[in-house]
Image 1 (cartoon, rainbow, N blue to C red):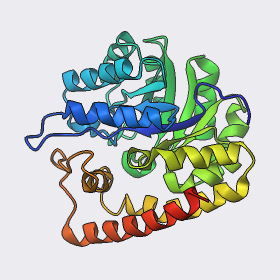
Image 2: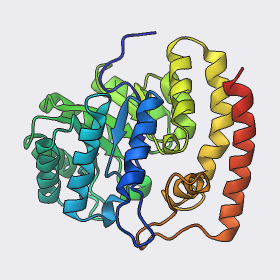
Image 3: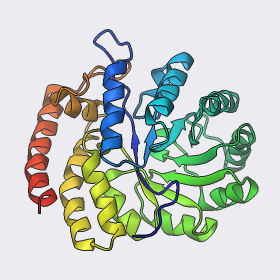
Length: 304
């Protein structure tokens, strides 16, 4: 297996557990981190989209990031979500995250205001200049309405040494090839879709930022390790059982489905903050069916 670099491997985009009253459930959050570390997860992402960052106060966000840093205690990379559609807010959030000891920050493209590619360059450069931590760009056009073009990523990583990676969540594996051609092989690319992890790895992506790993970090790590060790048959088998469940985790807006799945195991509650609400009965039934099939197939393949 190749030597692992700091941004290689599976990172978990952590959910933020809430109590029935809507406060952060710190004991559930600690238990979630501990299970991730026990499974061999390479990195943890607090306060991302999956963590319902948009509904967290500044104090809550910093507390979650600091809690993660302390709980991890150097056992995994900590990548904090600090992006915003206001550059000044992203700069301030990035400085706060750096102050509590994160390894890197994840920076989503500005949403709703949809800047030009020139605007993206100015936005990300301003954030990169504010703190000496890794900057990971995040291209997710389905949520933000704009993608980071490969040429833009190349301009950014060439202009700032701490812009080191991009999380790609546009659903197109061909983007890996375009990004590698533009930015070079040392620029890390993370897959942002669990069901596309294997094709992304095959095309040269260095890791996965996973929603599914909140529920099952072990299988995500097993798939990555199988590919890296050259056991492509096992990697394909894991991919084929994982993909339908990964798809089911997005039958409603994330993180409602993954929280519902975790609630079925009593790991977290299914409480979300408005405007997100728990899953409806029809879609919940579809999720349960997918989960039951996944559990059956998982036992067969993981124990083979």
